[in-house]
Image (cartoon, rainbow, N blue to C red; front, side):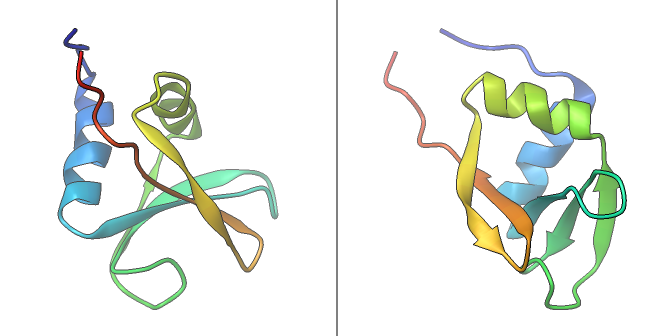
Length: 82
């Protein structure tokens, strides 16, 4: 089964496939961002919609990898063999 993704969702997936990491933090209001390399290591970063991240999580496209310094870090979920 193929799932249609929005342009914003596809952008996040494309970045993650090329080595960017996705983070979410509740500190100082919630925010989500992509960072080249690893979260907190000073690479280029860009803000993304927390709502878009939530949809990717609920669709099972990303999953939580762990926490790093109070930041929830996500990785791409393994592809299903549907």
